Image 1 (cartoon, rainbow, N blue to C red):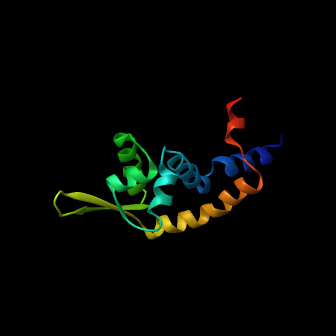
Image 2 (cartoon, rainbow, N blue to C red):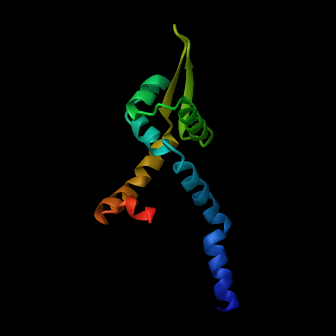
Image 3 (cartoon, rainbow, N blue to C red):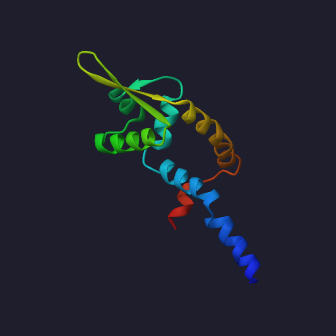
Length: 121
């Protein structure tokens, strides 16, 4: 392979312009991340409501995922001064734009009848 071609491949696959994509895909691959965003898309929810709608029985996993999404600016966490005290999660504007941009990927998976069980070989 020529030196120029090798350099072009390095820039394409590992260049700084791709770093954000790598990090985003890593974030979105966290357990429940996509489900959280899709569930919060129409409306804000309290933690327990969100957990029930997603059917996630593991509080720790849900908490870690929500913190990661919050740190990325995709989800906003608001403490509610009520009895009992609560936390309300809502999708940010940035989160809404991300979900909108994932629709072509969803369409691709449907159009190509992507079956993740084929990956288990």
